[in-house]
Amino acid sequence: MYCRKGSNVKMVSLARNTKTIVPMHKGLSRGTLNAILKQAKLSPAEMLELAAF
Image (cartoon, rainbow, N blue to C red; front, top):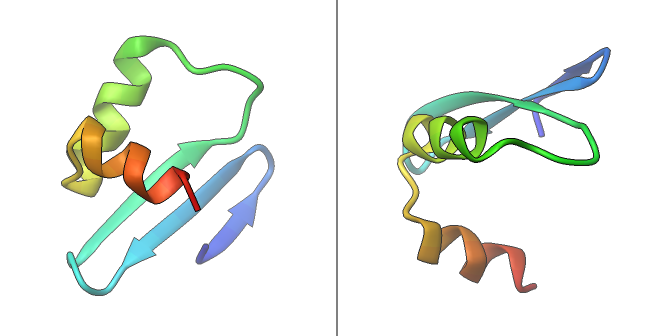
């Protein structure tokens, strides 16, 4: 996590050279999630692997 403002968090990946704004709500629509994955250069499988820590 890089910084938080309101209900949004700016996530930074130095390895992938990406910055992504992620809304911190109880639920995300499918389109929002797909946009976040695209910005973060992650596949759904990679996201699930990272979330399984």
